[in-house]
Length: 268
Image: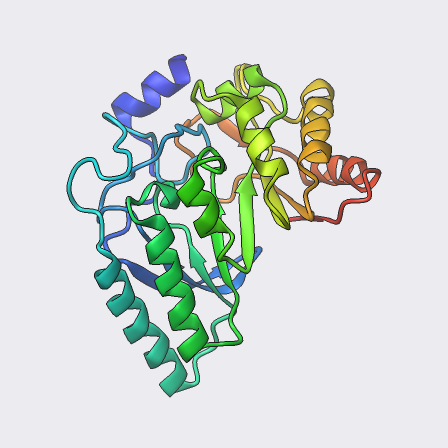
């Protein structure tokens, strides 16, 4: 794709990868004042997707899965960083609406995802018992047994699903993973909130907001039995420089179609 090649070679001003395990709180359109946890190696995006809209730019080089490579924060390091930050917030009366595992890649790729999640939840229970623990995931690992066990420990699961047909899925999210397997895995997870971004590019090659793409996506939403759906468009510079926001009116129209499925939906 010419746009992707241009962005890769010449660069788009996307966000730099995070250097710290715990960051924020940051103001989130969907999650309020969110204290973030980055389970990925410092300064390096690690993801098994290559989304055109990613605020951290393209996924470059070989993707590292689970224990491959160096730099993954240890369970003890995550425990120590979060314990310190939560205690600091508690001592200072600082408002934290959520503790959110997100970061600059796919957090479920952490080699000890289940164990690190259990530690995060235990710290929350001890220091900030009224604060929900949430995760933002691209959904591709939802069928992995240890990932599923970890996901069930979260109070809120925000799971990515930007398309309902394989062609649109590949164009928007940039990978050849089986969309059917992703949908099947999501359908067996309880109480998920589907997060979907709608975007289009200048060439017309990428556009998941067309009537046909939305119809396929709605079928997938119904199949996964989402507890709620969050719809939004670009808020920060994307990896693909030719990508554009979908107008708010179109987002509202898509939301109305979600409501016909009797699923709560929010537009951001």
